[in-house]
Amino acid sequence: MHLDALLSGVYEMSWMEGRLQLVNSVLSSLPTYAMCTLQVPAAVLEYIDTARRHCLWRNSDSNAKFKPLVAWNKCTRPKKKGGLGVINLRSQNSYLRMKFLDKLYNRKQIPWVNLVWNTYYSDGKTPHASKFMGSFWWRDALKLCDLFRGISNCKVGDGKTVLFWHDLWNDNIRRNKFPRLFTFAKNQSISVASFLTQENLTDNFHLPLTEQANTELQQLPDEVQQIRESVIEPEEKDSWSYIWGNSTYSSTKLYHYTFKNVNPPKPFLWILESRCSNKLKVFAWLLLMDRLNTRNILKRKNFKVQGDNYSCALCQLQREETAFHLFFNCPFSQDCWRHLNIQWNHQIDFFATFQQARDLHGSPFFMEVFIIAAWQIWKQRNNFIFDRGRPSFIG
Ligand SMILES: [Zn+2]
Image (tube, rainbow, N blue to C red):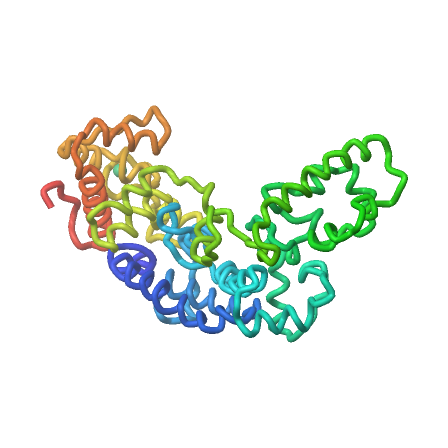
């Protein structure tokens, strides 16, 4: 058997979707129990990631040398964002534990929340303006404070959980709104509650102020008035809400939010929406990522191919076998596309070509037709390379 038979071809592919399922449903959820509660050490996460990479790209033999077909950060994108939907454990671990901060800052009626406030923060300082205190578990959770504040906006109630200058509250960060006045603040980490309890607002500042700082000070009473108006009950608690627009914290929402600006080319979404089997979807995904083990890729990875022949096996043109040649430019595949009435305009961008071909084809099953035909081309190529028969258009 040729060496590249071990590396590519339908046999490997047919198992890959099973391995992806294994990675996603079993290996990724093994550590979930610990991940909900503790900061899992980086070395442990790295160990699990290595196991997941092995499982995805090679067989169960964990000693086998392997080269991943696709960079890990592309695999860990959600499927709707053009990835394989493999969970990024580091992010997941942080986002799961941030639910503790959600409970803490919203002062939920839970015994441990009351205990933490009464034990560590009875002096009026907010958790993120205090020295990290408490058990290792709690100190680890507090390390996520900056991340938490980065995704939240506080609607001020009594102002006890929020910093006057640094936090985003009532849709503004006062340090940015009053930059000159800020430099005169006596305590830059003062909570909103403590700031407001000063008898005179000017007591919060080192005097005298510059003219510009003084101009900013004149606007402060409006801000203060606004807070007082927004507090309906005197004992109203601060309420923290999140960038996705409501006050319900969800690690899943946050996980997906971080991919908000990732917009993969549409054909990746068409693969996802197609009615093809998962096996074919993974194959099509690798094809569009240009990560199938075609001979040019094998050459790049320094794999020896029999006879040092890196040319396309489906035609006599002696062209190097790239995915582009094999699936689009090769006379064999061109015949296939003509037969299926699919026209490729290679004068434009690759993914725009897809859009145009789909529009011209006009069938709701364009993507299914494309994926199945490409799969057949790939099978013909493998059959020929591995001596299982000459390419046949009829086949
Ligand atoms: Zn060819």
